[in-house]
Picture (cartoon, rainbow, N blue to C red):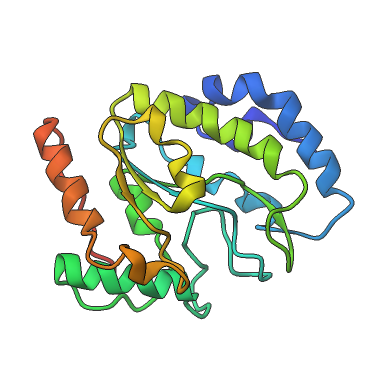
Length: 213
C-alpha cells in the first residue's frame, strides 16, 4: 500500500508533501493489520479545496467498528447506526440551531459547506482505539492545524485530544467531548454552531449552513 499526494486535493498537496515519508511508514505498518476507514476513505476530509475551509471540527480517531468510519470526523456512512457521540452532537445541534434531528449520521454536507471534519489520527485498527501509529498521524495533523490557524479558520475543539491544538487558533471554541462520559460536563449548552457562525461573520465570512437532511 502506497501513499501518493494524488490522494488529496491539489490545494492540500503542499501541506502534505513534507509528511510523505511519515505517512508511508504508517501505511507500511497498516499492511499487517485490519484497519479502518477503508484505504479509499482515509483522506476523504481533504477532497474539498483548502481555501474553502472556514471551520475545523477536530475529533480523536476513527470509529473502530468496521464500516462506520469513512474519513470525516464524527461522521458515519449512510445507513449505519448513529454512534453515541454523534447522537449527542445532534442533540446540541437541535438545541443550538432549532433544526429537526438529521435522518442520517452522514456529515458530508458540512464538508461541502466549508467545515473540515478532522480526526487527530486518520486510521485505527478495527476494534481498537489509539493504534500504535497514532503518534505519527498526530504529527501530521498538528502541522495541518498550524496552517489552518494561520489562515484564520475557526476551530471547534471537543475534548483534551482536540484541545491540544488550541494554541494554533485565535479564540477556539472549547468544550468537553460529546461522548456519553463527558457531554453533561459542559458540551451540552455550549452552542458551538451559532458561536462559530458569529465568529465567521465578525471576520467577514459567510456563515455555515449547518442544516442536515
